[in-house]
Image (cartoon, rainbow, N blue to C red; front, top):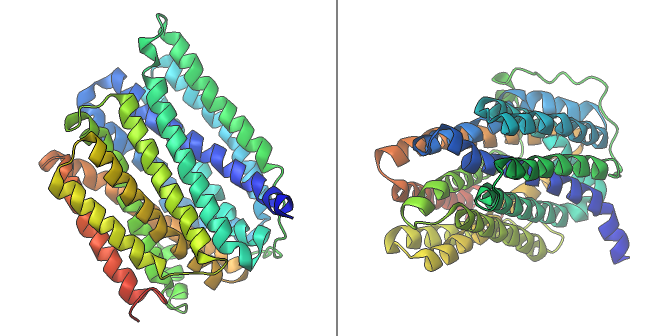
Length: 410
């Protein structure tokens, strides 16, 4: 029985794993490899540009992605999106072979487009595979796998970027790099064609607007009829703003304050992903087939305390690594009940557009982080970025406690 349960989830989880791994491998390689082509003094701008290009499609094309998920079989959308990843990686490989940063950044933009198109279908199909009782497990496991993939993508990116020290011919590094990107794209597509789900009937032709400015207004108003749903979207958006800013900041902080190599920095980023993944999985298990929003403020308190310790103690490498992993674990604990709450409260085919609306707000927040990071880091230093994250963690904890149903005081 347990094997049968695992088998129905395996294709979706594997498809997601391969895609997220490829996203983060490419993004990390831009931060570590492409920067050597244009100069280290442009590092903060380059990693911010890569993050921004990944999120722009979510901001402008999420309405279309939600409409697709509402009017078509979600499993088919996932398959076509994964097939598109293969030519995108060919473009990225061309950029690395020719050392053209603009071609590589263009491939990053295309990956953002591909991810945007199938995101509402990818998350919306969780309920179709596992039923209502599988929402917490499916969401928690999906997010755990996501952050394990982030871990491996970040770590492998750091390792591959240092391979030039071991080869006389720099082409050997590029071959390994591009082969990794291509294999992951192909494997992800193979798993996607195995996804099976019992989906509700698609709508023939919904009247949802495709205007990226009117779309969030419409669904903000729609979400007001579900108590706490807009605050859930806000909480998830702030989670990703914080996560994006931490990732950007680690590139700078680990080099300037901790004096670490690319591989060591990649390892810390990977451990952060492990921490978030562990927190996500723990939230899924602790929820015990239910939606347990009481975990949200607990996660927020843990994030706030651990980030305060990082900022005020100014720890060495070992203590810093421990504290950032603790922060990441509580971040996962904060996130999963919010995702599960959304999956539980939004019925039928309306879930696709709501996830698209959530995606749009999440990636507006990530874009804001990409814009804020060079301003804060450039005006002050990377330690002050951690102070900003501390303040934001405290704010979203209070918001969750007072505004999310079941989380605290209501």
